[in-house]
Length: 285
Image 1 (cartoon, rainbow, N blue to C red):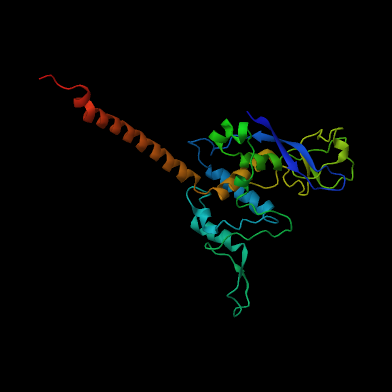
Image 2 (spheres, one colour):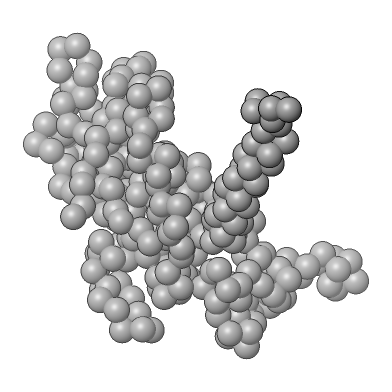
């Protein structure tokens, strides 16, 4: 079952002449159940491949992944594309090579050693580390059970934002710029939707990015249903892998380390008892 959380934060807003200098903003974050959550979770290869397809067909038109190399798409802990498929996918992108045309530079098809192109649209952030840069879970002193067990909640924030576009509330003027999103909290907010103390009467704010996922936007190669919620979760999972590509290996190493430390603790305890046994319980002559 999905659980809707409320994220509260105080932001300094410099939005428009009619905007308040500071306000308490609330956004609705949905706690999705991702396969990689928890100490024993791992990436779902099929979901990462679907997320890659969403990114390629919809997100890549504006957003870049400048810290992600094409060769990592072949990694076992990631989308795990076959080598030939990975090379063919990379060749669909063009990268700037300053060594071409006698040092003048020119574009060429990307190779596995290259990285995804950077941002191509003004104002569109790079998505390489977005899943780790955004926080979806809140708790006492900024730390909660969800953060300890499932991480910061970046994928939840991304999936919630992508599926968080709803009709503007009745208090908002029709010509207010942007698109109303009940998850995004750093955008514009009309004075008409504030009470006498300047507090927001509806969650979220208005974002410049239009609604991009509607459901059935792509035809998944594996035949999975392409609902809006499923698409949002798939691309959020892919962006989590882009930000943390070695998550599976890190969890395996951590589990191995805990097991070895547990075994070492038992051995040290038994050794200590054996060494000090003659002192604590001396034999009578």
